[in-house]
Length: 54
Image (cartoon, rainbow, N blue to C red; front, side, top):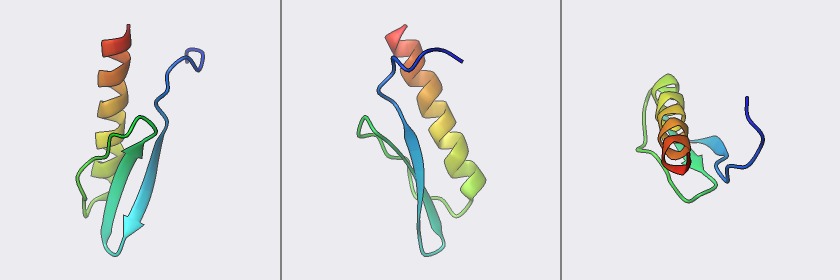
């Protein structure tokens, strides 16, 4: 893992039966019934953000 130079920190939150992925940069994924899919959305966002920065 690389040093914490990236401003991207993802979190998960739940609203009823939906899970949402959010990032400290302001990004938020769509509401998902699948927590696993919301985690995948967050991981995809991090990969995309790291690619854009590097």
